Image 1 (cartoon, one colour):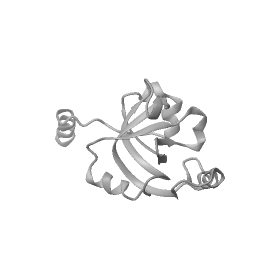
Image 2: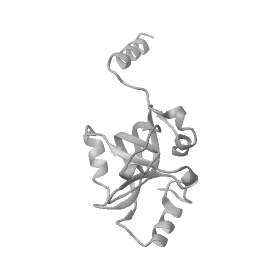
Image 3: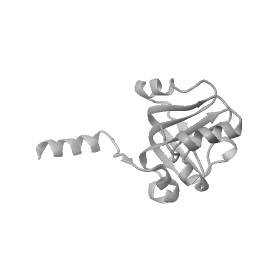
Image 4: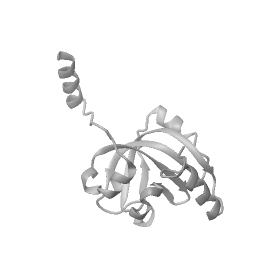
Length: 151
């Protein structure tokens, strides 16, 4: 009991916010429930010139979230990001960060949601660089979040 009390005190005093693992689609289907909260999700990340988006095929109709990286990423997160192809690509990854659903975000304010990532892990590359749309769609249908065999 003393250990539990000490852990709770350290969490409050140290400013540690509880994190919850949540399905990415639950964020987009219930954005008000998670707005301003720290979450942990597994989703597909597509990035390149002027885009940095998280999505899942199962809820693509709900939109995509702009992925912004904190300036204070830890070394493990930085190592995980180095696994991503240079310039552009598609990968599945686990993101921990603060979810926002009030306002607009990203390039030309084109996104309804944002996650400000504080930790990145479990990077699994789906595609390197940009490909023809039909090739990207084939890879996503197979390996992306919500695909037949997600990485």
